[in-house]
Length: 247
Image 1 (cartoon, rainbow, N blue to C red):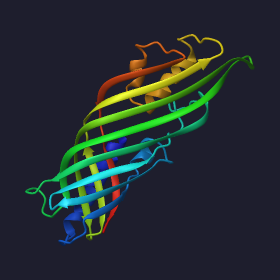
Image 2 (image 1 turned 180 degrees about the vertical axis):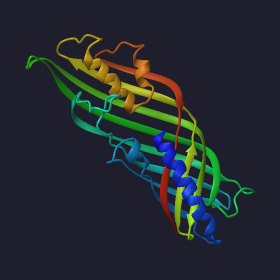
Image 3 (image 1 turned 120 degrees about the vertical axis):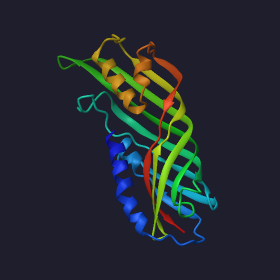
Image 4 (image 1 turned 120 degrees about the horizontal axis):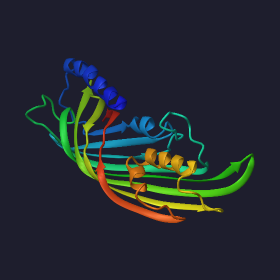
């Protein structure tokens, strides 16, 4: 909700700027973009760039691609979770959308104004690590864990793009409902079998929920084994702000 309020604030602030700008018709059909949204939602080390190509005066094709690095996990109270000593952590994002700019609604040619269109995206995060379980300062168990979590989405976006001085752009996807297919491949090994009601499992659910929203509630209905997979369909969403340069 906080991120959505930030997006809306930017939208209204730059709406006044855009109204005062005059966008001359030009042959600038390409826009390169930087998408800082994953830095906020996933982690500050995430880097995603995009490219948009005008294919006719009111339509374009847009792609985004980049790397994702999850920020430290926290509990619902905001405390950092030291569940595992992570050895590797990473991910990537790739998406494509075809945009239809509203010809009658927009005063200027694409890529300026309101647009809608179908989109496809693929989101992948992975991490692995290990943890020692201590009791009275003595190691009583060792746990190795790895996860590869994916989201593949097909949906519809509604957005608005500002073009300033015919060179700079601010692109905002304000709504992006989707049908999303979630895949989780979990590898889990412990020297001594853990109680399913242990604190470790509570923290594990919190971690998985932050990586893929909705996954924790599904895990409640499944038994975790030393190695397993979960596949299910669920709703998804997409919203972002990105900054570009036209040429």
